[in-house]
Image (cartoon, rainbow, N blue to C red; front, side):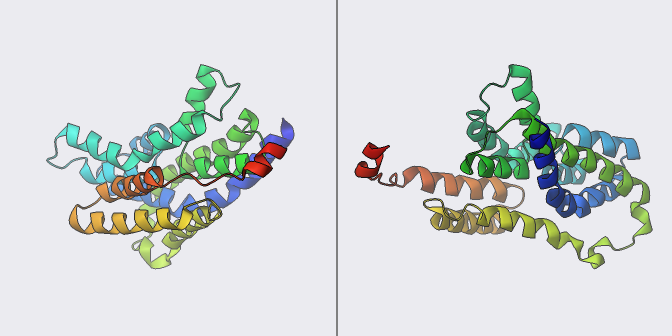
Length: 234
């Protein structure tokens, strides 16, 4: 158990470093958009989804119907429904409450690292899962507080150029699955559809529409052939 916890914590370090600029930026933007420091912290603690938090603070305080805010955030986070469908079948031995806790922590890196761990033949144990997820969660909340409290001290945070860290990390996650069947066609279809949706439909819909294009392609493609001779030998 201890080794799984430590392994998860070690793997979480790269995510924490990559996400730090966005956690700090959210806190600063939340205060700029009229939220208090503790409201920003509470939003990070309860919503816990960077992209939808950014969408939310942009819509809060504007003349926008509440249902449209909820629907916009749902559109950004729809991919998490797909994550839970994929990871949920691997959470064997988890109780209902443990699964609920696991799904709460199921952000993008948690999903990718969970899939990678299973591909390596390792069990998706609760100690590893929490060892990976809890440090990221606690740090994310702390960054919201720091950004909300001290964000105004940095007049132009974009000038620091730290916002490139998270896209590079996510690119690394995508490349980690490159040996899977249909990886390149699915990535190209998702990327092209996302760009077109961003141009003609707008944000945040390009996220879900890009994912949907990749899903449709993967579902429509024929399954890879299995070598019957090697299958019979097992």
